[in-house]
Length: 264
Image (cartoon, rainbow, N blue to C red):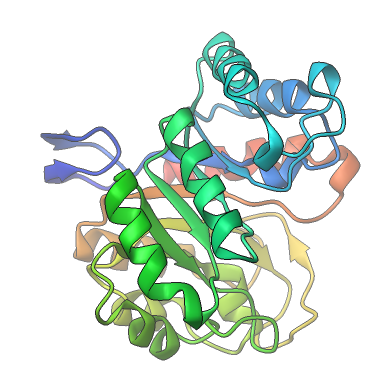
């Protein structure tokens, strides 16, 4: 377990923290309604979830995306979270314009999020840093694989962090592997900036098309990853992101939550 004495980003207080909170990225259940996805997340053993702005909750919400929900509808989302004893602490935000980003920060405030996760264009960085300060919500830079994201390499992430004190980092172990990068070395480079980790596993290294497989059975050395996180006194969240067998992946998600919770 991650045993850390100090400021807990997850809970906002100084405690003896047993381990990094394990959550589920709701993108894992993107084939399902929000109601069903939250039920699955709860049954997996997770206490935290990460939403995504282009999610269509369906059911009583119709065809709207998260980004289009009204304040009263977001209150209904909070009720669903409470019914499942879950906390939504972050959301992947797919803003394309400054107006869209501002809407997403507003939705984040209404949901009580701690941070947004995204890959914003450089022309927006200064304004987004200001919005992050105004709303009290960090913006964590995420990295898709090389060829898909300007942030695929830690060097590009660090460059974006300069002069933007309200930016942070969401490290994606699987996309680093697809890009031919050692996840442990990437974690070292981004030390002090990480607020969350996307946890997955792959069947090959350095292959942009590597297949997503059961966490703990692929090429990612999770023992080394957790050793590094302990060394850093990592105080953020670890979100399971299962991107295979989309229509029937609950067992894989639960196995990942169990596996990550057992790491010492």
